[in-house]
Image (cartoon, rainbow, N blue to C red; front, side, top):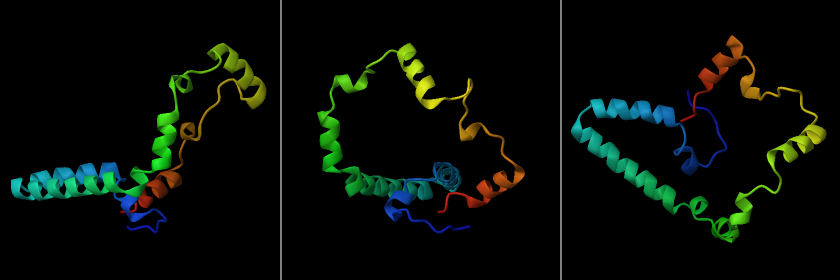
Amino acid sequence: MVHETKLDPAVLEWLCFAQQKLEELVVLAQGEERALEAFAENRRRRARRAAAESSTNAAVRAALAATGEASLRRAATYPERAVVQRVELKLPLLPTTIGSFPQTQEVRRQRRDYGCGV
């Protein structure tokens, strides 16, 4: 089932990794000639991704180059941050994320049906 998406088609082809892995297994089972064709297409896709404007954004690269070692270190220790988080965020003792919630059969069905849209 194909789904409407607002993603740039160039970006969309980089996604859906599980589907691609299954497709790769099918291609490999089809023999060496077909596998070589698939590998060539993969090289073309990788080259397009490397050359894409979204992969070569000069402003992002400049910002990354301007970050120093200090940006990799936290200003406060964990116990200090934990106190601030407790006060500011007012989280329960054991906060959870949405991924921790149980999924109903309906949610599972919708996720399965949605697929990756390719």
